[in-house]
Image (cartoon, rainbow, N blue to C red; front, side, top):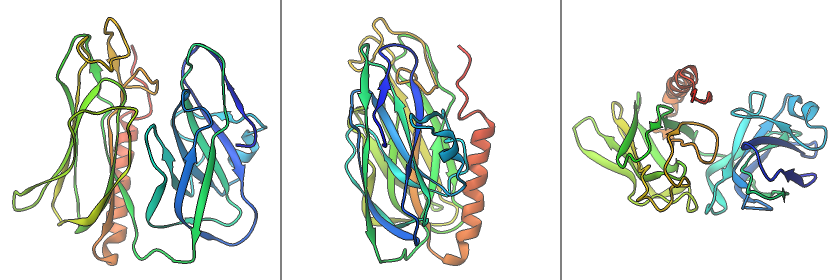
Length: 297
């Protein structure tokens, strides 16, 4: 970040976007990303986007700009992010950094009760190797979260049926503090169930993007499922509320989320456009259902 950002002691969580200009020049291929918050106590998560429109540059006059949900422009491409506990990210295949693009860092800040400052840093690693495959994001998510206080076994689900043969390369789960268990699996056309990820004791401070040692083949017609479990009782040691309070979907650290992102690539390049359009349709349906709108309390 070009300058440190002051996070107030009190108040609601903030989503702030900071523009980091890159030098004009040719397109580059990024092989890895290392992101390091200057103050992990206040950084809930961070995401790195590319802007080739110049929109973000006009909005950031030196201290960033407010950007809840989306960064305020249609990103040319994402490059990854940071969550508590995550390690530097090696891309399954190199990602394109457009020549002259502005890097836009979206940071979610959570006040700690005293004034704090943050100056997050990032490093990009480049390669001359071009991607050998087209990697896409299969997003499973739910904003239908409304957990009464004392509820011990609250579940949310989502699913998606892949329209073509794909290989799953990696997986990235996300939730907040009262989530206790995550389960992602695939039901193949022959009825076989393949576990994609299972975390029996979720810990917000230990998040990671996981890369499979070998890709997992998911044939056309495979139904990919997500099931997250939450414990909003006094018996959950990670519950931030004592006594427990109603917890709903929302952007704040003490709200909840449910997201499972699976990196996939089509087995046949000729299927890439169909897969891309189907995934885009799923994302648009989620957005239309209020994925980025906090529910009324």
